[in-house]
Length: 417
Image (cartoon, rainbow, N blue to C red; front, side, top):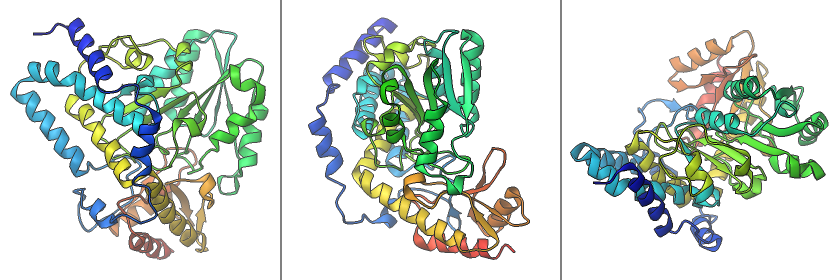
């Protein structure tokens, strides 16, 4: 029988034995092989899910259905825990968690040692912003477009540290936003006391995608003394990017949306040197040998879900990240073009793929967003309302949809007069 300290040692050993320092050349082979021009069998991908038939599902941005590999892994781990929870946890747990970190590292093209595992985006944002080393003389710059979890985490941190938080509006009108407007608005708001920039990669309020790499370059000499922290939940699982190409210092995401990961899973990635500016909030059970381990909250989690997360990363890598991006963008481009052609519809999300991803926000004349979503529901189409002011109707065409699905949705919206 292992005590807790021995369990931590076993976890560290499993990480090392599993190739924690995997070479990026190995990752190139994993990621490049599936990304050929040939399209995969999207119908076969769709058959991996048990979504109710007869519905057009465009709400995956909220909570994903589990694909077959994830379902099987959850059930396998659940059986093991039910049969002998102590031995399964001690004998299998360290290696299973190490496998999740390696899979996440392969997907993000990151060092597994720089990744902390969490239960959600909200948990990750809370851990990151609460743990930042900020003083009363420091300022955090964020935007009016960010989600409640970012705003509230920063408010709580400011109340404890005395640091100030300032919000900037990046674009006057989402559908007419440009990269130049976004970058100039943010950089122009930078102050001498700004130490952290808190951003969201893809705004769930409007569907606008930020040009993160351009933002980082535009900071110029300030880049070395400002941390860029990103809520990436609506970009991860959609965009063919890596932590290197995003040019941020921290990336936070839940995995139970676009990635099709088990419900109740997420991560925080931090640049190796950037982790030095963060302190752990919750004691870790994963040891303190690496920043990722130290920042992973301890306690007992839904282990069968956490350990099945590696299957979600592997599924996306097998399909190919470039293929995933092309498919989702093609469906969203089709949807936006159709909505833009309707005189009674106002398309909120930019039509440019450079400024949008997998979310499409819109309004219909003389109908509230809730009324639009309810009308679509009566036609067996699943949409959502953005929880912001102003609210919009929102659709999220993803890998489980087809061009025919998009056309069906457009016919339904065209009838809402």
